[in-house]
Amino acid sequence: MNFIESVKVAINAIWVNKMRSLLTMLGIIIGISSVIAVVAIGQGSQSAIGKEFEQFGVNRAFMSTNWQETPTDRDYFTHGDVDAIKEAFSDRLAAISPSLQDSGKIVSKKELQNISLNGVNEIYNKIETIEMMDGRFLMEGDMKAKREVVVIDEKTALEVFGRTNVLGERILVQMRYRNLSLVIVGLYKTPKVPFSNVANFEQPSNIYIPLTTMEKILGIGDRVYGIELNLEKDTNVQDTLKEIVKLVERRHGNVGKNKYRTYTAEGELEMVNKITGIMTGVIGAIAAISLFVGGIGVMNIMLVSVTERTREIGIRKAIGARHKDILMQFLVEAVIISVIGGIIGTVLGIGFSLLISMFIKIPPGVSISTIMIAWLFSAGVGIFFGIYPANKAAKLDPIEALRYE
Amino acid sequence: MIRIDSLTKIYDTGSIQVEALKKINLEIGKGEFVAIMGPSGSGKSTLMNVLGCLDRPSGGLYRLDGEKIEELNDVQLAAIRNKKIGFVFQSFNLLPRMSALKNVELPMMYAGISPKIRTERAEAALERVGLGDRMHHRSNELSGGQRQRVAIARSLVNDPAIILADEPTGNLDTKSGNEIMGIFQQLNEEGSTVILVTHEAEIAAYAKRIVAFRDGEIVEDRLVEERIVIVSES
Image (cartoon, rainbow over all chains, first blue to last red; front, side, top):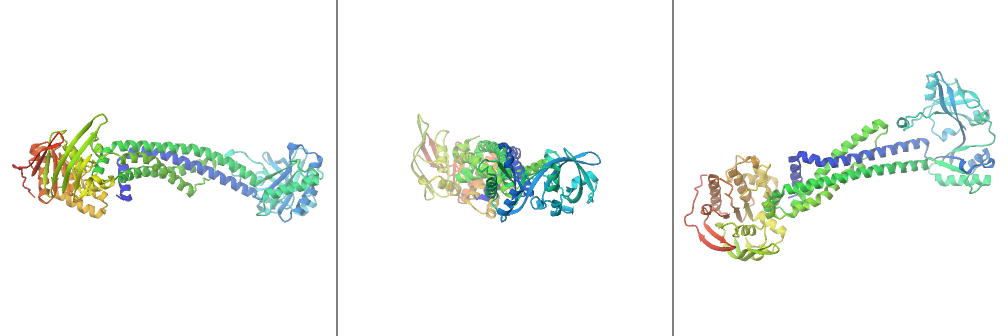
């Protein structure tokens, strides 16, 4: 008996016992669908997070003083440090900008809007992706003249003015100690933040003003709180940052004192990936256990089936079925049950993940490889849990089997 | 066709050994119609199992169509059962939920014959036992007599050296039983070697030769004098 005959016989046996076959498949269906759904959601959120970081910039880094080491006056970055870094690493730096942040409230028609006020230089748009819709980004002239100009995002414009043709308009920003009246020179597209829908929190919009203007407002001397960096492509970000820190440490005479911290998109991404990876792994393991239980269900039913069909096995042996024919017949049956369960499970799993993604607004990451692995795994479950019952069937003594009532 | 020399079969039940066959010598030629008779426990079923290659002898020689059966392994025995022996059982032993045609095709499936030829040969075999119009009925939709005809058709399809029938009329009424015996006689007339195992003298009377068993030994081996002959209608 060849393989195709075995498949035909097995499909017939499955079809004859429709209800039982379906119940047997249920374990596999639940197992596979949960594995697929979990992995799809896991991979989907990983790629969503990845995209977010890509938007942030893969080669981007941020440096600040380490507040845990209680920095003293002589530890803070200076503009001299920024220039020195710019000079020493000119071959590896795409852009560098000191940054100064403060929070404020924009006075709009209805209510006060929380915003994040960023003092940056004119090349900051080479560090962060800022997609201009109208007007221009900050210019060198703005920096030199410490102009009170601002680049705002589309969302803020709509909230404050209800329209987007707002160049030349003034906005009023309330800060802790004083109020500012800023002229809008540019409008940029509000970036999409993937998880904003899930967590349901409103991140305040970023608006950009010249660093020098910000320093003047806050009354800061030659002190830089944070440095934003963008490195050239294919640069080793971590190593370069270490060198930069060393340079700064030498300039401040605090080598090895751990006074500075660096943050990279890469590092953060790795951490987030690690966490989502662990979560996917844990939930996936639970799903795999359910698949294992499903496999035991297959074995259980196949054992019942062998007992029930003892006489059939006897008849088949009497008319010439060999050990391997019977083995193949029952093994193929177990594998087919598992694989059909796997296919139904895959469809349901994709369905579940689409359903879940509708709520958390993350596109599921169903890959062909996941599906292939799930099917191979279900076939493997069928073989693993089918081999014992099949072997039991194949080893039956024909005389005993024929006598079985 | 069949030669058995000092064949023994001992069942070892642990504490006691039961000698079911005691050094049997028997020869059955091609084209014979032999009834193996005896009460239950006489050893006739054991002989049937050994002749049918379902069981191995404990000692002695068994030649079937030139094959040294006692030397074969399980796979080879399966092939012998498939090609050289056609079984007909008391309880028909058809696969339920399968059509008569598919049941008859089954031995050819294990013989590795292509589906097309299988169907042709199965149809011919069913025609031969008078079931040409019932081929696509499932076996559990047929009467006892019809089922036994299907079983006979199944035993024939691989053109076996011997047809082994174990109480083939045991589950049938007299009329169907007689019809079945008529089919065996017809097959025998056409050249098949038929070995019939029965405990009923009336049934044995359809055969040409009777081998009687008691306590694991042959007590009688004679030709049938008053043979019942069914004249084939077809």
